[in-house]
Amino acid sequence: MPDLGVPDLGVGIGWRPELDLTVERLAGVGFVEVVAENIDPGDLPESLRLLRARGVPVIPHGVSLGVGGAERPDPDRLARLAACALALDAPLVSEHLAFVRGGGVEAGHLLPVPRTRESLEIVVENVRLAQEALPVPLALENVAAIFGWPDDELTEARFLAEVVERTGVGLLVDVANLYTNQVNLGLSAVEALDTLPLAHLAYVHVAGGHEHHGIWHDTHAAAVPPPVLDLLAELCARTAPPGVLLEWDDDYPSDAVLAGELARIRAATVRAGQPVGGRDE
Image (spheres, rainbow, N blue to C red):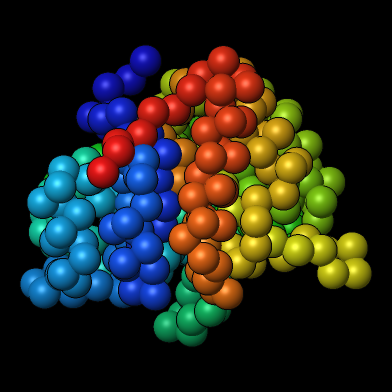
C-alpha cells in the first residue's frame, strides 16, 4: 500500500463556526476537516487552535482550486492551501476533482469534469502542479452531480483511478457522492468501489441529503441515509479506511443528534469488520 503519510484518523466531523463548541464537546472525534477558504491561516479560530493543542488532526479541505479546469491551478490559491496546511500542521490537504471556473467566470458549484482522454491529460498535469506546490500530500474527492457531460469516454471511477495511478495522489472517497451519482446518473456505486484504487485511500466522507422529483440533492443537512451507510460498509469490506468523516453544513442539529450520527458511522464500519477508531476527549 502506498505511503501517503496519513495517520490513523478515526471517525471525524467537518468543523464549522456554527459547530465549534459542539465539536469541542463531542466524545470520540478523531479528526476534523475545515473548509480552507473559510479560514485565515495567519489567524486561526480559537476552536481550531484548541483542537490542535489536544492533538486532534485538522485537515484543510479546498473547494475552489479547480484542478478539473483547462486553466492551470492558480498559484495564489495553491499558496493559501499550503499556508493552511502549515498553520494547522495538517497531515494532508484535500480538494475536489471538479470544474469550477472557465475564462474567469465562476461556476458557483463543484461541477463534474468531462471524462475524456484529452481532459485526463489536463487534469493529470494540474494535479502534478498542485502536488509540487503543497508541503503535504494531496487527496482528491469524487463529486456529486446532477448531470453528465456528452461524449464521456471513461466512467467517473475509471477517470479518477487513472488520475490516481498516474500521479500518486491520495483518494478521498465520498460515498454520499457515489450514491448521488447512482440515483441521478445511473452510475453503479458498488462498481465504482470495485474500480477505485482504494490502496491510495486517505479518508472517507459521508453525508445526508434528500430526494426531490427523482433527483438526489447532496445537501449535507440531514441524517446519513441507510443506503449511504451501506456503501460505507461495502467500502470497509474492501479496505480499512484511515478515517471516516461526517459532513453537516446547514440546519445544524443538537449535540446528541450528531453524536448519534457518529455512532451510526462506527456501527457501519464494525458491521463490515473494519472498525474505525476514535479519540476520546
